[in-house]
Image 1 (cartoon, rainbow, N blue to C red):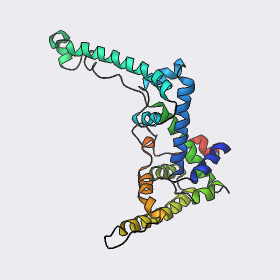
Image 2 (image 1 turned 30 degrees about the horizontal axis):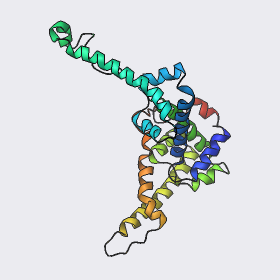
Image 3 (image 1 turned 90 degrees about the vertical axis):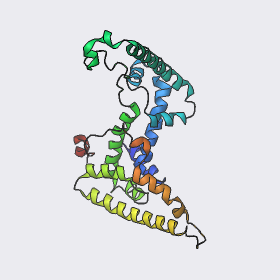
Length: 254
């Protein structure tokens, strides 16, 4: 990854939660903004969006929260809604066709018309596709930068990787010093989080007047983020090959 990418990882380590999740959230926002600003009039980009029926639910939700997204979204989704209307017109004709006119093949599911009520198969969300590539780059940058004088200390002082990203990183690292370092840091951080959660729970005893530290009060939210990962990064459309093995190119660059 570029020096700029490493710098983004260092910055993400200063914020709560998994730094790779934070970087990928920024990638998703930038990519969504680029789609709205530059690609709504590009036939190739609009064709890809049509094949995917727009964005997945998670990234459509993120789009609703973006400023000045209304016009670009309307341009993209007008075509998709019109396409949905065409599909429903075909579905209505197929449903209205008497079974005897479809013949015995239709009754047995062998007709070309059988199943026409189903919506055309959609391609994967383009943001999810982009994030899988970016995710691998960020994980490789983190693994390669643990000994870096800036990234190494920044990661050590962060909340650490969420468990899904830790699992992917370990799959890419294999039996290496980086893997041992990641595991050691993760054990230390998760044990500290478990202790904060325990104190948070204990202070809810009715016999105790609660006085939570900032770490204890935030512990349950951090636990959600670290155990599950961000929803838009570990949904059904973030399809990853294998257990997260590094690409040959990434291994050669080390």
